Every structure is written in structure tokens, then in C-alpha cells.
Image (cartoon, rainbow, N blue to C red; front, top):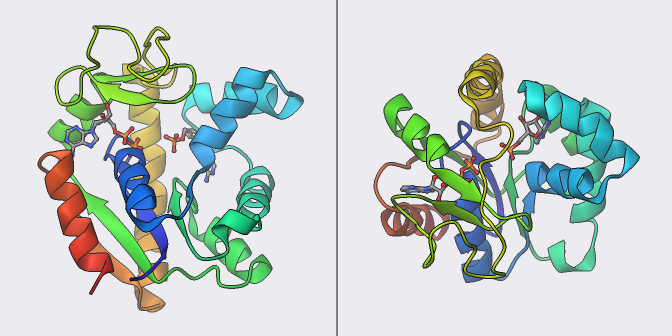
Length: 213
Ligand code: ADP
Ligand code: AMP
């Protein structure tokens, strides 16, 4: 089975949800630059303070920071046999730099997740997260006790960047970057389109069908 996978898709498409499931199924790490940046913010590091302002505006954090972060994470022992990348690369510049600086940066498969806009908005507005990053949805994946994380009992909140105004900006940034990025992976011969509508089980089954081909 292919074990180096890049997930592309709009904010709220379900990349993190699918990545966690694939990572578990395939015993490889789920590497999400957004999660790594939010961890820096939570720890109050200098990098986190810089990143927070940019993330709350819906823009992309500077290239050097995220490429460095991803390469450092993928260089660790647990990523030697594979990885699921979620939210990185975000544009062609990041992809090219990643390929220049990291051996085997070209994935076996790049899954391009397609979901219609109404569903993206429904998924983002219903998303709830705990401070440690566990993700729920008020309708499609509610916690057992309303507003409380099943895993660690902490209060669930909305992400600071899941407000209407910031989501609009994030979607705009995504639309600007996705075309060239998709073309890039298509030219490398690894692009596969994934229908990401329907429940999480169906999406996972479709994704596993593609990566095990
Ligand atoms: P992304 O990482 O692409 O931003 P998430 O994985 O955080 O997206 O998913 C966004 C929201 O949609 C979360 O609340 C998640 O629980 C929910 N979700 C994810 N996949 C599905 C799905 N297939 N059907 C319904 N809701 C989903
Ligand atoms: P995400 O968790 O993928 O939705 O990302 C949340 C925010 O983190 C984005 O809106 C960006 O500000 C920042 N971010 C995450 N990944 C990247 C990346 N690869 N390049 C630049 N910014 C990123």
C-alpha cells in the first residue's frame, strides 16, 4: 500500500478527519502544519505569537516557517516508512521547496478532496475542537456529552479562524493556490481525485480504495 500521502482540499473538507483515520490504519504519522502551528500558539512560543496573528486573518504563515517545520517533523524516525500530510504543501512554492530540500518528498499519492461549498460551510460552522486538538462536529460527529471532549474532558470551542469573515478569506486564499498545486501533482503523475462528500466512513473507504490500488 502507498504510504506517503498528501491530502489537498479546501478548509473544512475533512482532511484532518480522514488523515487521522488513514494514519491509524496505515501506522504512519499524521503531519498537519495547522495543528503544529496551533500547538505553538497554545504553548505561547515566539513563533506561535507571530503565527497567531496571521492565522486569525486567514492568510498563509510565511513559507520558510512551515517548510522548515514540516521537514523537521518528517525527518523523525516514526516518519521513515511513510506519512500523511494535511495542510502542507499549501502552494506550488512550498511544494517545490519541499522537493528540493527533502528526499522522497514526492508522495505516492496526492488525494484531491472535492466537496461542494454548502457542505464545506456546514462542516466548518459545526466544527468544535478541544484545546488538545480533538475534532468534533455538532451534527455529524458530536461528543457523548455536549460541549465536552470525549478524550480528555476539556471544554470544546470553535476555532478562532472558523468565523464567517476569516473562513471567507481562507477560501479565497485556497482558490488562488489550489489550481497550480493540483497541476503540479498532476504533472508528477500522483494526483487522484477523491469525492469527499458523504459520511466519514464512506470517505475513508473511497480513500483506502484509491491508495491500495
Ligand atoms: P479540515 O482538516 O479539512 O479543515 P476537518 O477534518 O477538521 O477538516 O473537518 C471539518 C469538520 O467537518 C469537523 O467538524 C469534522 O468533524 C467534520 N467532518 C469531517 N469529515 C466529515 C464527513 N465526511 N462528513 C461530515 N462531517 C465531516
Ligand atoms: P489548517 O489547520 O490547515 O486549516 O490551517 C490553519 C491556518 O494555519 C491557515 O489558515 C494558515 O494561516 C496556517 N497554515 C497551516 N498550514 C500552512 C501552510 N502549509 N502554509 C502556510 N500557512 C499554513
